[in-house]
Amino acid sequence: MGFSFFASRAAARFLEAPEPPPRKKKVVVLGTGWAGTSFLKNLDSSRYEVKVISPRNYFAFTPLLPSVTCGTVEARSVVEPIRRMFEKKGKDVAYYEAECFKIDPTKKAVHCRSAVGTNLDGNGDFMVDYDYLVVALGATVNTFNTPGVMEHCHFLKEVEDAQKIRKSVIDCFERASIPNISEEEKRKILHFVIIGGGPTGVEFAAELHDFLVEDLVKLYPAIEQFVKITIIQSGEHILNTFDQRIAVFAESKFQRDGIELSTGFRVIKVSDDSITVKCKSSGVETLVPYGMAVWSAGIGTRPVITDFMSQVGQGKRRALATNEWLRVPECDSVYAIGDCSSISQRKIMEDISTIFKVADKDNSGTLTLKEINDVLEDICIRYPQVELYMKSMHMVDIADLIKGGVGDSNKESMVVNIEEFKKALSHVDSQVKTVPATAQVAAQQGYYLADCFNKKDHCVEHPEGPLRLTGSGEGHHNFRPFRYKHLGQFAPLGGEQAAAELPGDWVSMGHSTQWLWYSVYASKQVSWRTRVLVVSDWTRRFIFGRDSSR
Ligand code: FAD
Ligand code: MG
Ligand code: MG
Ligand code: MG
Ligand code: MG
Image (cartoon, rainbow, N blue to C red; front, top):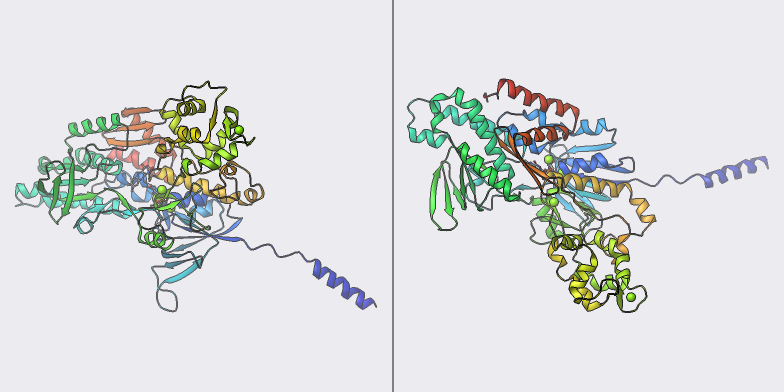
């Protein structure tokens, strides 16, 4: 009797035993650049089982790469080891140094290759499965299939590229200093050509110019007169993503510095000692002899992304399309952030009838101003182009926009039917903006997505929010769509001068802006270690100049 009593107690206790905690969802992150590290830094890694895959075990602070090309800042100062970042933040994250070469969304797994041959087949291939995949692979260089570019040009994407450029610049000076070289040959060797007049090309040209006039000409006085820097730009102006005032300032500064600007020229071929350029207006082709060329003319798609896009039916796009919540619409567990992706903003005209129905609470078939105002906030969250459009047309409120559609009716007593509502909003979608491929965007996207991941459970439990308007998007969670906040951009122009474009149409140029640049970039460093290193590199350069050894 006693025995059975204990037995049943034990059985009861066994039955009551708590369920094992649910398995943590597996999050796999591809890439440790701006987007990937920003995501990882903000993710609550105790909620997920996190694995990170990237061929580089460090994060590189890319805005300082142009400074590395001329030794203003040392390569070591702009990188932060990824494991150290996790350890410092107390993150429970596994890292594998490998390259992902295939994403398999049906098996929910990524195929990776490490540099070391470890598995039984003797190669370094392995597979990692996921519940959620965060693709943050960045972009690659884009040569537009121009012949000879891959073989003969330098690029400026990675830390190694910057180090190679630095070595190559000194090489040119040493080569041109050998006796018995003709003047023509010296001019050729000391002709530095930059292809692409965007921020990276311009900043590199400025760095190189400073390096030449501040350091190298003192060390190589005999060949100073043969040095030349040229920027080849296919558009009419350099820095064409900046305010026109900045482009003009930069162009006139470069002219004074003797940096040649060849605008309106397209590079059509590069050989080992000359570049063939074509004048876009006249069609005339010219040969430009050069000593060193840096190609900085645009970004392209990594093969693994191209392959993935064709698997999910995105065809031949330049970047992986996501919705406004940064999810790949064709796969409910794949997200993409940073340079490898681009957001497709939903058009308001696609949802206009649904919006009208939701807004028309009394089912009268018409909307009053009050009815419109009640859903206006949700509309503006879901379709930011509405606000942008009103701003661009100098409209103060929605009534102005609607009145434009229905003719001159009184604001307060205004009533619109579906046709008038459609007409009023018909031009709004022209204001859809794409976000640029910058570190600023990548970092904000990483931060935002981690926030979504941290609050996923809460959102599933409280499924209200701006989405009730159309029911599209994520459907099950009420997170606001990602919204990019532009904090401005800098263009360092050399000679301790910089240009900056700040929010609110504020443009600033000159020496004081350079000091602003120093302080912003010092504060943006990812750790105190790199901050100290960068600031001491700057100080060292001020006092002793740059190091001109290879
Ligand atoms: P990346 O930072 O490029 O990171 C991609 C990551 O993916 C890397 O860790 C890479 O190793 C990894 N990876 C690549 N292939 C694979 C693979 N097959 N499998 C796994 N991992 C892979 N932006 C600004 O806002 N301001 C600036 O001043 C500025 N200056 C710049 C200067 C230079 C010289 C350059 C090159 C860029 C600059 N940018 C600047 C742009 C900025 O660096 C990019 O927009 C940003 O790096 C994009 O972040 P990302 O995470 O998408 O890509
Ligand atoms: Mg990244
Ligand atoms: Mg990076
Ligand atoms: Mg992007
Ligand atoms: Mg109504």
